[in-house]
Length: 167
Image: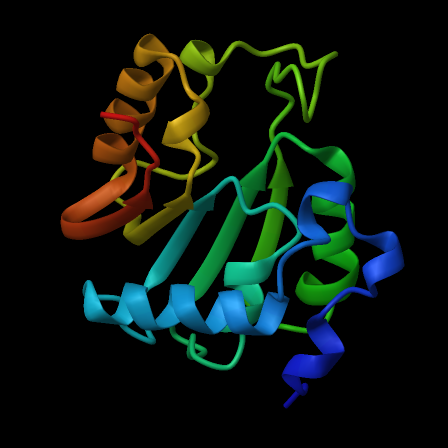
């Protein structure tokens, strides 16, 4: 079994937005919160906005062989990092680049958020997670993502999404 330390990308290759985070600590916090909200080790997990893999690193030793993980992000470099440092070492983990238009992470993206279909079959996901993704979405995009979550979650499936909203 791979050690968690082996999954953490070196700081010098991380995207600038990930420099101020501690991968292992953040991943553990996300994992504990997800477990409190119903995540099980044999779940099929979808993460929206996986970035450079903090939650995935936190899940690497928790998700069993019966479970799986798929991370999605519009930042192509983040997906490349995750595939090299995590998916290549952890069976059942995969990362998918979403060529979504995003002014910060993918300004040449070809797909509008409202047209994006999550890379999962209908009713195939037990647990979905996002960290501050909805914070950055327009209302129509957020509504579309919620509809997509409804499409991919199994009956009884759960989702945990952190959102920063000003009063």
